[in-house]
Image (spheres, rainbow, N blue to C red):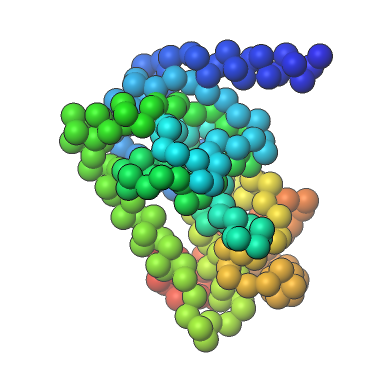
Length: 251
């Protein structure tokens, strides 16, 4: 009965027009959100939808049906290989958009799946309406282009050199997560609480789960990270960043 009520509430929310002030809440994460001048037209053109943790927003291979603007919570972009293994590519929080890549590229299907890692509220607008806004609103077009450029730069910077040590790969991945999905804590600390498993963070670092576990044990022993079940705390972000080059931090 509870499950049925939850499903009914979620379905009702998907037909609710996004209120004009839906973008007033400031993102809790550390990543820079899309400018308000670009967010407002997107929010007004869509409908409010909610997803529970673990629910899929976009399936890999889906045709370009809609674009989602994240209002609260976090989603992860994942790619499933032909062998069935899953790789984490990015985590997006409030003020970020997803689904726009395949809508703009004209590809037949999405290259990534998008899944909620926490409870997520978003505004969804149809692919057709999103394309119209790209033509009608220069702030939207500029912001979307900047978002795509940042994604490209992020992925290029994240690609490890063949001689990168395991520690450098793991630290770079943790810094990327801190910047995209970290919540500032007391002093210089940052908390990452988005229900990611070790295998997912390992894939973000281009490293095996076993190698990731070894590096994580070392970082814990040095007091550079603290972990709980699917939660990670970086006591001092600058101290962790000092283990890698500045280029890895600025992505």
